[in-house]
Length: 153
Image 1 (cartoon, one colour):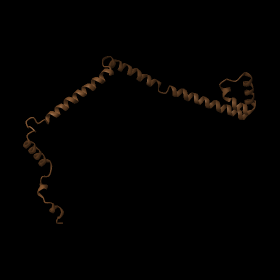
Image 2 (cartoon, helix red, strand yellow; image 1 turned 180 degrees about the horizontal axis):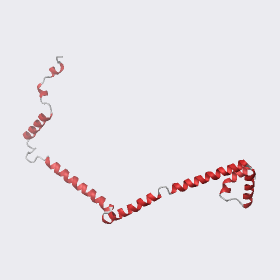
Image 3 (spheres, helix red, strand yellow; image 1 turned 90 degrees about the horizontal axis):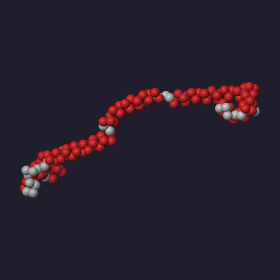
Image 4 (spheres, one colour; image 1 turned 60 degrees about the vertical axis):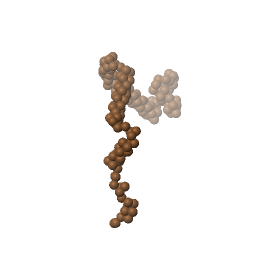
């Protein structure tokens, strides 16, 4: 076996996938060639490191996740037996809608003017005038337009 063949078959040798003849020639070449022996050792070390890291990553949070699931199952089993989420959510939404409708009707009734008939024109005009006097500047109608444009500076 030459160096090129060893480079191509290093992974197969480490995984024990070579035939017995190829394995023997691979071992003989590694014993004689320092470069190929170093390549074999580097690849083998790298694969061992990768495998140990992979094993650690798989079980990194296993215990804490398992414990959390067990605690959640105990807690959820008590709640789910009495108040399932599929029933609680629609009930809560219906209660909010009823409360909102009730509050809206009550707020709307506060501003209802039952004691004043808006069909009477004089009453309507007086209400509008009183509202405009409270809200807007009523003095602007008393000023003439010339005084606005010719101001003494």
